[in-house]
Length: 232
Image 1 (tube, rainbow, N blue to C red):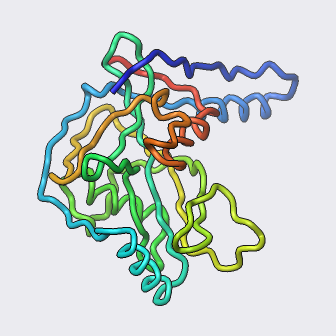
Image 2: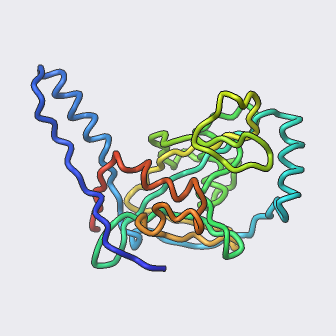
């Protein structure tokens, strides 16, 4: 996996005229657009019992989606964008991805239960796939932050798109992305049949062939942020 220097730094100090209240608001907004990122070496990685895969073939997945849609309607998924810093000489952000069967890359997350909120569902899925806790725990140690974007599946066998056409009256799936901020240190415990990889954003950017349309578009969604990579 290649690595390259990629400068995402920026400044957000506004100098426009205004009263003290406006200046305070601008400063607060600027602070919220800075993401503190800790180096990969700050985290511990272990493994736990494998989780079963539901989808063996595309046809199996389509059948399951149709069955779930008949029972519950629109399928809603939530996924996490989690960033860490590089340990190399040229420090820049990396994104954590799960790899399935040494080929398919996914963001951590999954499908919501009926009536479950986005935040609760994402915390549950992160606990199941990235920590020692199982998915029945409350997942209070995950800090779910900014909503980044939304994709739609118009039909069961079509691709996901970052918009919903007015001609589509009954979309079949909606996928939402949230930024999840990490503490200075934590343990990642991953099922044995999954790999957790830290991939440079510059390698992911517009690399649709390898990572798919959603993951390869994440660097653009993050363009409004500045990254503060903290050395520990």
